[in-house]
Structures are given as structure tokens and as C-alpha cells.
Length: 193
Image (cartoon, rainbow, N blue to C red; front, side):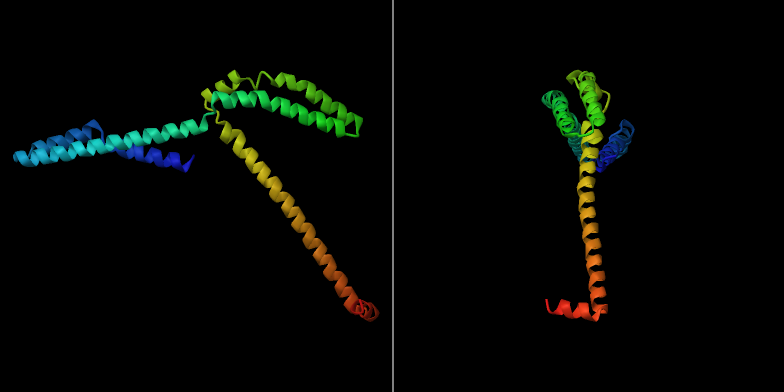
């Protein structure tokens, strides 16, 4: 769970415990047991200020929850953009792959995949995306974050491959230099270069 949401939940629980009818009733009863009117008024004022502070904190927590919900929910414009953009882009991408494939069997598989994309149109409709959001699917967490992580790993993986290749070549160079040093004639030719 998101640490921010955990913090909000904790704060909400603390305010709820402080502001229960039982705890407020107990405080009022304790204040009334005093016979000093000035002390009763001062303590009631303190209680009122505490309740007002709790109310402000509850409003702050509610606003934070609302902002968190809005940040996770895609707008209708976003859903429409996704619906109208993803399939055409995917179709264009697959057409380009099919155009560049040399193996006729693989090319036919790609063409069949392109033809089957029409079946996915109904899955990417605005109504379907809205229903998924209503039942709690978080597109940013469910698709965005894993896709970001995947691309990050691909990029890091290619860098690791390059680094590994560089290290292998450096080791190979070192071995060749050691072979030259062991051969006196080769070492003389190397020095004269």
C-alpha cells in the first residue's frame, strides 16, 4: 500500500478515536464535575478548540484522500485518447513488423494478429475503461508502473550487456598483451610500433 495512504489512514484513526462521542462525553462530564464556573468555561473553550482542530484535520485528510483518488482516476478525455490511440498505434507497429519480416510463416502470423486486433476494440472502448475504473482498477498502477519498470529494465539490461561486452574485450586485450610480453620477438615488434 502507498505510504501516503497509510499515513492518512493513521491520522484518520487518531482523530476518530479522539473525537468519539464517548470520549467527548467523558470530557464534558469531567469538566462539569468542577464547581468553578470560570474553569468550566475555559475547559469547554479548550474542548471546542480541540474539536475545531479535529474538524480541520478531518477536512485535510478528506482532501488528501480526494486528491489521491483523482490522481489515480483517468479523466474521460484520457480514456478517449487511450481508446482512440492504442489500437491504431499497435496496428501500425505490427504492420511495420510484418513489412520487414523475411520469413513468410512469421509474416502470416503477424498479419493474422493484425486482423485479430479488431476483437480488442470493444475491450478498449471508453465504457469498458470506465467500468474497470469503477470496479477499482488503477490503470497507472496496473499498466503504467509495470510498463515503466519493464522499459527501465530493458534500458538497464542493454547497458549491462554493453558493459559486459566491454569487460570481455578488455580482458581479451589484456590476454593478448600478456602473450606479447611472453614472446621476445613479438614484444620487440610491439615496442617498435
